[in-house]
Structure formats: structure tokens, C-alpha cells
Amino acid sequence: MTARQTPLHSGFGSTSTAAQVINGIDLHGKTAVVTGGHSGIGLETTRALAQAGATVIVPARAPDKAREALSDIAGTEVARIDLLDPASIDAFSVNFVASGRSLDLLVNNAGIMAVPLARDARGYESQFSANHLGHFQLTARLWPALTRTCHARVVTLSSGAHRRAAFDFDDPNFERRDYDKWRAYAQSKTASVLFTIALDRRGEPHGVRAFAVHPGRIETNLQRFITMKELQALGYRNKDGEIPEAQRGLYKTVQQGAATTVWCATNSALDGIGGVYCENADIAASVPADHATPDGVLPWAIDLTMAEQLWALSEAMTGVRL
Image (cartoon, rainbow, N blue to C red; front, side, top):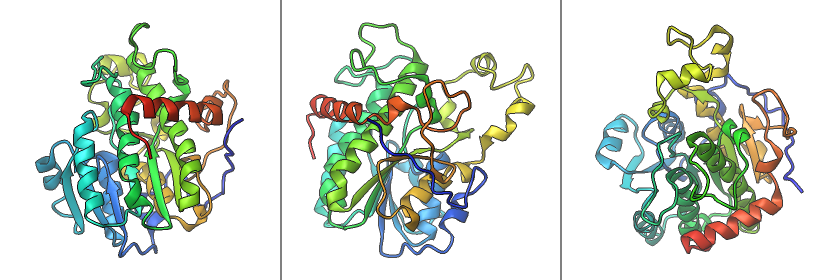
């Protein structure tokens, strides 16, 4: 059984920007947390939410660097977090919950992509740890703050890369199979969608709704571990190191890349909806596993049984429960 994926025909599209989708929305009095909200599409997400009136807290591994990046955006605060370090996640969350604030928007935006094999202190593969387990723990620890308001939303960044791999429950940390950085990235982004589905089922009775986002193909620091040779081998660059003409229409600016996140976080058309994968500022269509074009969400990312299986595994691996 899979989650329902019914496009709303929102009126926005692949070229819509974060500023356009949030135009006319007032977030004064709202509080948001945006991980990785000081660079790339995270920075544009922070900018859009803050300019609409929200107070935006940006937990970052390098707080000084984050403060510098956010210096021109009023209404932002910076704290420290390292998604590969459970103690760091707990410290940030305990401080936030103890402040008595309600949390209206949690944007699980930070992540790493196609990195060489590395493991956190527990031995967990780093992309699975940072992209999924860290945000799983953060969301669970911030649950008291999310449930203080009756209309909270959790937006988690996934990727069209989920089509490269289902989640491997037999060997999620590449302990027995050969490490493939692209499969590791892909399964972590499949996990982001499965997490969203299971979270929404738990959150709906409390007014907490969850959304997974494919931002599109954007050039940011996220790709810093990918060499030009690899990009050329994948067909993302030609022999001159440029984006091939036929692919240029697939790329977005960072302002366009942040649009779906901001739309999921703020648009009233999503009231009463949750547990869905979104792209191009709309709910994506469900497509079959052999779907050829890079749009839609594949069956293994929206399987309800797998979502519950991943939730149980995540609890066991982190020792954290709602």
C-alpha cells in the first residue's frame, strides 16, 4: 500500500521562486527552525520565511560562518548543531524546548551528498546518519515544541535521486556490501520520504503535518565532493565542463530551488494534507518504478509498510522515540 500522491495544480511550477510562492503570506509571530539555513537553498528558505515575518533559528555546525551568511537577514538566530553528533542534536533541542517557544515550522534541509565512505561515532554510514537519522532525532526531540501549536509543519528535503535506490533494510550502513556513494545518497533520500509518511501518521492527531520535498537540480556547495570527471561521466557536463544544452532546462536557481520547501511550509492549499512528496511547488504524481523521466515519486519511497519499518529501525538505531 502506498501513500496518496494527487497533484493540486497549484498554479506554480518549476520556474517559481520562493519569493513568489510566499507572496502575500504573513508569518509574523511564527517560529521556524531551518537546518543548513545559511547556505544554498537553505539560505533562500531562511530569507523567504524571515522576510514574511517569521523568526528563523538556524542551527549550524559552524555558527560563526552561519552568522556571517545571515547578517543581512533580520529576524534570524543561530545555534550550534552537528547532525552526525547525537549529543549536539539533544543539546540544541533541550535548549529550544526549555525556552517555552512553540515551533510552527521545522525544515530539515541540511544534508551531505555523494561523500566518500565515512561513519559517525556509532558506526553508521554518514549520509544515512546526517540526512535521515540526525533529522529523525531532531524532529523527535523537538516534538513537545511542535505540538504546542495546532498547525505545525515539518518539511524534509528529499531528492529525485530517490529513484536510484530503495532503502536497504538488510545493510543500511554498507557493512557487508561494497560502498557506493550514489546508492548511499539515494537510499538516504528515499528514507526522507518514508520518514515523512510515518511522521505524518503520528503527527496528524496533534496538528503536525509532514512533507517531503524534491527541490530540483541546483548548483550549490552540496556537490563539493563530486569531481568534474564524474559530472562528465554522468552526462551532467560536456567535454568543456559546461552543462549540456539539452539539460539546461532541468537546472534551477537557488531561488527556484527553495520554492517547493517554502510552498510546503506555508501554503494554505495544503491545510489538512500531509505525508506527501512534493516537487515544483505542487504534490508530485506517483509513478511506476520504470518511469523514465526525472519527475514523480517511485513506489518504494511511498510504501506505508516500509515507512513503518524504517520508523522502527530509526528508533532502534537512535534510541529516540516521540
